[in-house]
Amino acid sequence: MIRIVASTAAFAVLLATGALAHDTSGENVRLVYDHPLPNVPGKSMRAVLVEYAPGGNSPAHTHPESAFIYATVLEGAIRSKVNDGPVTTYSAGESFSEYPGDRHGVSENASSTEPARLLAVFVVDTAETELTTPFDE
Image 1 (cartoon, rainbow, N blue to C red):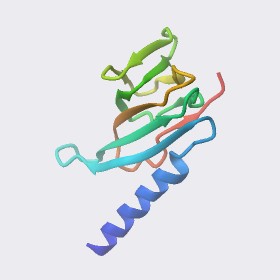
Image 2: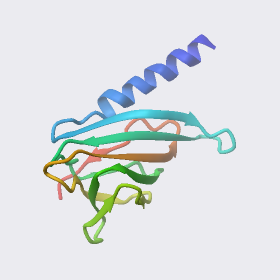
Image 3: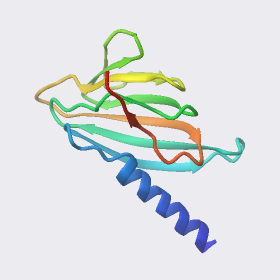
Image 4: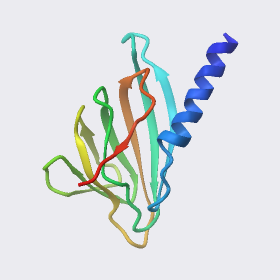
């Protein structure tokens, strides 16, 4: 049991540091929930809190091929562009989804004066260690 707890804690630290924490362009990303799905072997639910400073943004990125993502804006407004779709602004209380293989070209705070926060919930392969991979647009 101690080994399981230790390996789970190490995995959470890996996700929360190397694989998630960007904070280079006015964003801070933290893993806030990680739990295997008991009725879907090999899958987990992970939630990350993305906090944008005024004018902050995330680099263009993709997520694992196994990931389905539900995101909801908690505070402020977020501009988002997935694949070849339009840039859309989502306000607090609004939600959007990303499907496996989607390319997230724009993810940014819509305000240059107020912070913004969103919660992104992933259903992803439990063995997955990187939740985002940057790409050049």
